[in-house]
Length: 154
Image 1 (tube, rainbow, N blue to C red):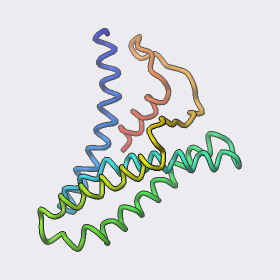
Image 2 (cartoon, rainbow, N blue to C red):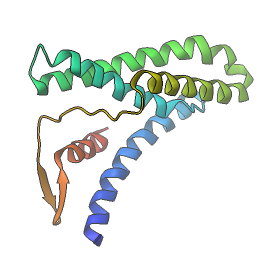
Image 3 (cartoon, rainbow, N blue to C red):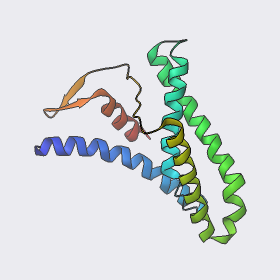
């Protein structure tokens, strides 16, 4: 693996992780909640988007169903996050360390629900744009390029 490949692919993966970390930092900075379930919400959003996309693609084009399923999954997981906060986190917020235990329990609960529902079979959504683009001589799939652009914009 050459230096250019390490830099390009590392920047893309780093951008995706920076997006996740910025959400974690925002929650901790604003609400002072150390949320160990933060990554689980991303996984939940991905699975919700996959399920919605498979349901919507029968009624509309692949591209539009993918965009709509991503937008809807953001709102659905946001609603789940608010509900979890009101029911589980707010009652123990004054106890400090209990928040860590509660959010860890929530993470384990959601992970087990996802594992039980979807098993260990990998699932994916076909991306409307297939192919690769060359950046500094490194072939980069369009999916990774879109992820980098979203990470930069957010």
